[in-house]
Length: 490
Image 1 (cartoon, rainbow, N blue to C red):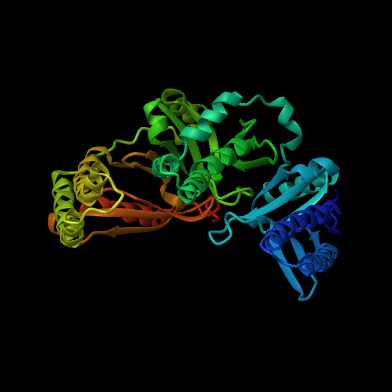
Image 2 (cartoon, one colour):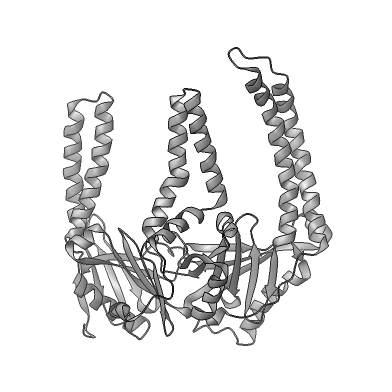
């Protein structure tokens, strides 16, 4: 592509087929449900008319939406019903991602997603257009030459070996044990409801249990499995490339300088197997979901930590970490006591009432005893959890302040280690309630831009004077010139 203004270009016609197919499937499901519930033949006729109307809108939107590339920016125009023009300077572009769904594979096209550095629109591309592969690669190189003053590495994938490799079985294991613990717990509860419903001959409870189990466990597991199948990651000089996807292929690349923070994540089940996964907070690269970009799937802890040294030596630094003081435990002990006092006050009457409930006809003695004891047991467990949570938080949480980065260790069941660059902190807040202020400890919350928008990371309880160093360090780096606005344009 030359340096002249190019375009305007419109989407490949396969976009019409894709959107129309999705529309027909959705309306067909709705129509089938209405007809099966006693709807008339006129419903089907109405749906056909609605499909024709939607097809008209889809074609018109396709025909009147275009993108044009200039020397300093690209322009997206939509001229159907209302006119809208969006101009995006190249220097604001964070990445140009490639996705290929089933329709792209059939037509031999690629979908380009143009992402910008924005907390408002971090997870949603500013523009998505499908082109034939040759044209898509040409446009992508053109934009990259003006964004990063270099070409894209899309044609060099075959030359680079993935730094990490995962078998299909390892991807399956990751999709199962990487789920948040509470999500797995709820899935287990709904599965237990379904099993109990079988013995109680309750078809309604069985259907609800199976449906909620699918929502909590089956669908997320399958989604993660399809997303990360064929995972590849490599670094070429200052560029990191990610590729993955079974049905929906996804490819992105970003400059290491755009990483705001890195995270070693250890969900409970993965931690029991001594495995971790490495994530990076990079604004404007995730065009497929709201998930944080994964630099590696779950792998042995030692290998995940070694991967930081190998792929991200910029983040390989030893930062001394401090533990919460005794005042933090006193604070959480008092908070748990206050919580339990309120809990007992609220739960006392329901527990008393159910404990003295009369026998119900058709319910056995054992089951009745379980019903009566359930509120009491639940209240006791909740009260005990409040103290356990405070004690584990006191033992596990850490924080460390380095020269240009800080680290936090958070989490009880699902744990994480996060390293944050001071220059990428948007807001830092020191907060505490009446109890914590009495003991001289506070929380520190740092807000930074992430893949999914703005994200807050909160520390445990530490001395207020120590945490106040965080905003002081950030401001000092700005005052003495260590903060480089050229490297931090976000």
